[in-house]
Length: 248
View 1: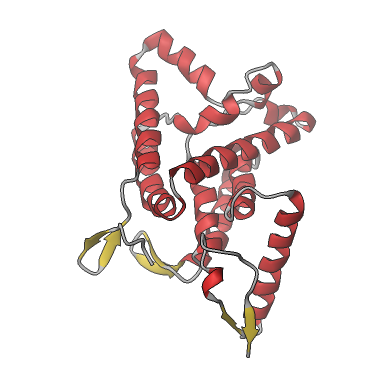
View 2: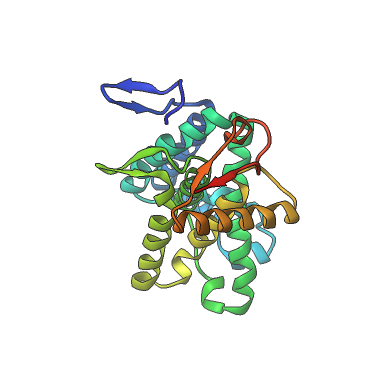
């Protein structure tokens, strides 16, 4: 269900244009437009902002945090704005700006860091250049699936339950890897995992492992047609989690 601050439009509701989403988009659009208009300076900005594992090895570690702010085509900018607003606005309204920005930066940086480590064993992967917020959109889709599984969202024009975003995103990423190569979309795959792990907030490794186990148990019980009853304390973002009761 969309947050109360959503903008109603007939039977639908649009997410709010929240502060964190607004400033991320302003910076992203500004950087993306500067690159084609800035000539040689724009190309220098592109090189500095985009992420390459080889560059990170040589000290350009800020690229782990900046690459999602660069888009190299008008279509990229349009989809970045729509995707971040439609998913990010709802999550920021539920989480608050600080936690949303932490999630945005944390998931994109973890995906880039995992790619950088794996690139130690692959020369082709080390030379890849990554940009665009598609990585973050994968993480946001995973967070929606974990936190609001029963919510109804529109995938283009098709209404689906939010829990389906995770397998759909994974399937699309796999298809892109088949057509364009694994290396080109490896951060997207890592971002899905980072989104699942960080959806409930920054946790210790033990807490993250327990979260994965709870998700697996929940999945197994659902597959056996058991009904999950959640108490008031289990509402995402309110109180404690983990008190689910599973009934026939």
